[in-house]
Image 1 (spheres, rainbow, N blue to C red):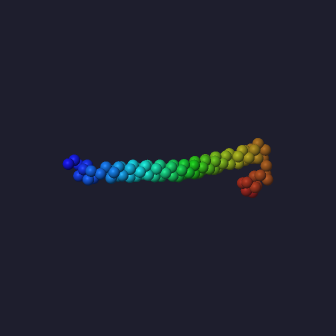
Image 2 (cartoon, rainbow, N blue to C red):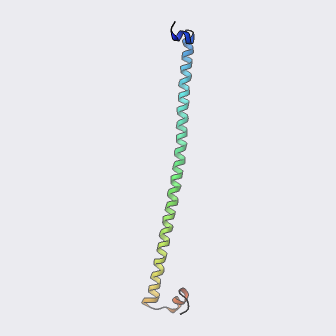
Length: 96
């Protein structure tokens, strides 16, 4: 007696049913993995977009902070060195 006959009692219908069940399980597992990966991709994309948005905002803030002192310095040179403006000096520096 061969192993098939001992295992299934010679009934190949049981073997076919088991194979069909195994194939369905593999397909269900495959689709579950694909659905999970799709969800992870979406979350990763959102996280990366937020990271870029915060990085851009920090960059703009840094540029703004570096431009303001330059503008103030230009005003100071124009109002104190080129032509002296006592009102500007009193307002921005203090009493003269």
